Amino acid sequence: MNRSAQFRELLKSPPFVCLGAHDAVTAMLAEQAGAKAIYVSGFAASAIVAGQPDVGQLTQTEMFEHIRRICRVTKVPVFADADTGYGGVLDCQRTIRLWEEAGASVLHLEDQAVPKKCGHFAGKQLVPKEEMQAKLAAMLAARTDPNFFVVARTDAIAVTGLNDAIERLESYAAIGADGLYADAPESVDQMRELVRRLKPLGKPILFNMARSGKSPYLSLKEVYEIGFDYALCPIEPMFAMHKAVKEMMEIFMREGSTNAVADRLTSFEDFNKFVGLDKAVTEEARYNNLVR
Image 1 (tube, helix red, strand yellow):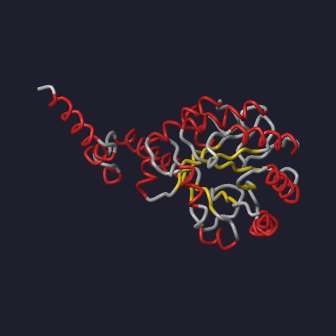
Image 2: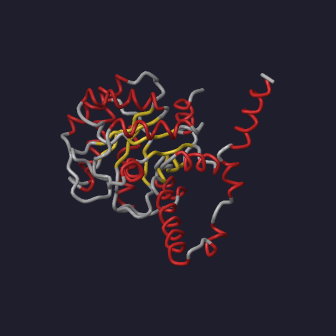
Image 3: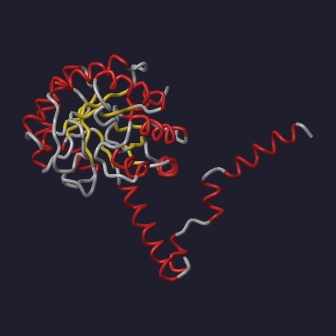
């Protein structure tokens, strides 16, 4: 069973979280922690790859390489942000082919207009739903693995309202999207209405558990009880890294040593074990000994 098929199996036993990973190390940590799937956020990728905000500056091929590095070190399914597909229908087709080549198993395509923005930023604009339907149709036709899972995302709640968001997702479901995702609902009531009207479509419904965005912060259990099937924890690992590294560097620059934070540092030996030094040394010795 490949990873795309594994992801579809996960959807048969909800709920679960796709835990955010912004590089190879956090992907390995997520899998070690027991994550059943990993999420590669465009917001995080923009920051990690380019040091830029999530306003549509990262290119298709930059994101492809970023996803591929994460997929190389993991065995669980990887859900990778595809933004707006990076252009028109032909660009969307290239995107899904690249994401499959990178090793991803899931993507979401959104109906924002260029320049796109993080779903929790102000100033978003939408494309007509017919344009999004064409992109989805082209993308679905281009996938080579029938198990690869395509999620249709709408950002309409903040732009044209909840009713339009639901109507858009209904139209995307009719095109054949595998899953549905309305980003940034602003209340539990909106979340309940999304579920009430979308559940009859029979498509898994995704919720974004970003702690500091526009949506209520609920536990996975609470999200599932409302009716969502699975969730993203997309950027919290990056925020945890930012805070920890920022504090360590400030302390070092102020005090001239890491003594004050020594108990918060992984040891040299433990980190080398984590990244597989023992295995690499053993493997190297095995082959060198063959020719002696």
